[in-house]
Image (cartoon, rainbow, N blue to C red):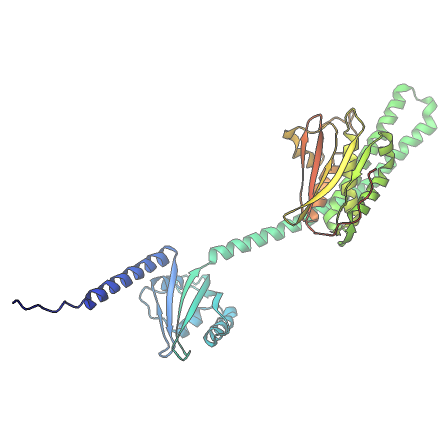
Length: 392
């Protein structure tokens, strides 16, 4: 009877397969870190040995295969960041903080500053003692440079905006006096020499007075626009039903003249600039009264909360706006109609848009020509609803 041999052990096969899997995983990790330009390092605490891969050497301007020491690494770190690096390392070793920091180093070859982001884990024994620190580092200089440029640009824009606001205020304020003089002279000319003027002379005087009035209106609007950000009042809790009440009282004559009906739903109380919010509602309602159709104006004001923000809607049954001009009407001095058709300086809706933006929101319009418009604007602060006000 043939003798049977015991089955061969497969321990060696399993070990070889495990080693192959480990080599494959290691190669994948190497390729991933290489593609992402991430350097890998290890600091053995017992021997104080520091090991860097080629990418780590390149990040710090050292030749590939260099044998850096912890002391050399610290020397390459910028003076202002060295204490932060050492403190973060100590906290990570003590287990009180995760090692994930940024610091500047000086490239040993180019002597240029480099911003480094580094993260590491601590390998500990069964007793919890730290044995080594294994981490990765990568260059974030481009990102920090872009952030610095963005901050610089933002500061320049803020300074430019302040200069423009100051210029608008100064120019507008300085123009008021000569305009008052022109208007006054026109009145005196008419009063003193009116009998000596023919119809053409009277017409010229009226043109002069009208031009002065329109210029004063433009300047007043421009002043209001420039002051939205620079001269706005501190925010306070404001009842928007009370705000609309003031706006309607200011417009009471115009409302009566055109037999308008204004319906106001319950509106919230929120944080804002009371005077500016009155101006916003007054301009939007006044716009609906001005650009009315053949029927008496019917204006509806209501609000809804969308994604935690108050969205306000002012709907009218006026002449409407063509879709292609929906954005243009919010620009300074933009008019869709001649002064003979509708008076105004083209500042009201631009002012409203800026006020909405100061209150953390935005403004837009939806409209159908000859049927009416709805002006929408967002004010981000949430508030409580008040007792409904009756329709007017």
